[in-house]
Image 1 (cartoon, rainbow, N blue to C red):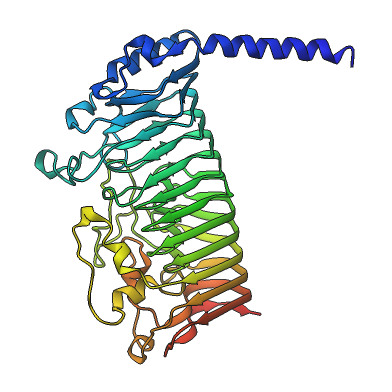
Image 2: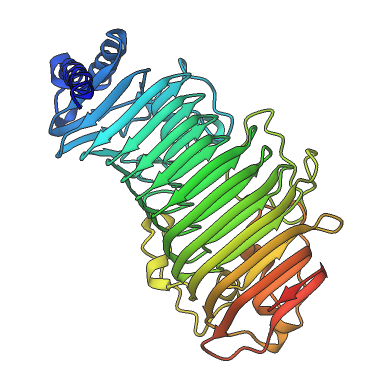
Length: 482
């Protein structure tokens, strides 16, 4: 102990002295005014630049409401928001210039926070980053010649050692936190509040990222909650655990951008709730490999289709900017990148309650300007969204080696004899959304163009009446149920 103590004391004092030095940066020292009106873009950028030029440190944002436009994060900067501190996105498009940032690979280029090739960035604290991107100030396709110029909250490209800790992220006009080809990322204890604000409000979008840990996060979004994308490079070595996720679209999604693939992903001990368009969606439609995925200890409550695994042939190459959204129709032809693979998927220890979408909640998305649907009974679209497990490849390309184990799912029923005899379109190149296939002829699981699918201790029940079969197999080899 006599030899260890002095060494520990030196290390401790070095850490304390460096921490004290880092605390010298304060937004107000650079002219920051937190009155909710003054534009602070220049002040915040000067503070970030000064921090990184000094070799790095902590930039404190004291309590206040600071309006900003696009700022660029730099290496070795910790942005630390006090309780009561809010960074508010400007609601004027001219405050989101794109002349000094790289054009986006997917979607428009505008963003609130930008970084490229930076290392050691940390965002922390008890404050809020609010994009204020409502549809009144940022309507879709309102740019020149009908282009979509809505800014996303974050766009970081080719960065390394990123930490997002403790902050609340709210209301982007487009996507939320979008990381492209980044490595060594840690999300811990963040809150995401992006529901019913505008179109396409994804929470966490990770495109071609590697070595990622997402834990203890509370996410509520309008579009996909946690979304892995792979427009160019694969998503690899990603762990998601101990998260709560709610979404109008999907709690957990791989794709639809899927050229690079998804390899070695582990998701465990999560609660997915209030997801009317489905909970888990694993998709390879642009030629990538989706392999070695483990999803376990998942509770789902009030969700649409619980598990959707789709191997398709949309074939996008992402060699030029690609628009987002689901405009691609059922008669589209593949774009040419080839067909990928889906294999070695294990989903276990799942309890799920599938429900019909709540019409009152649907109407809460005021930006869609929809009235509450008063159609009596359950519509075919509502039944399609609350569908069964769906695992499907395409002719000649099979989803392989999927194990579903220790799973209990309760379905709402409502299937008719007409639904039971319905032929399901292939839609090989269409945007991959399960309900686009319509009401499926099974109420529990619909498996097509697949090989070596195992259902082990899988219990499926329905609460109402249903005239469809429990399980329908179409071009399936090596199916086992026990």
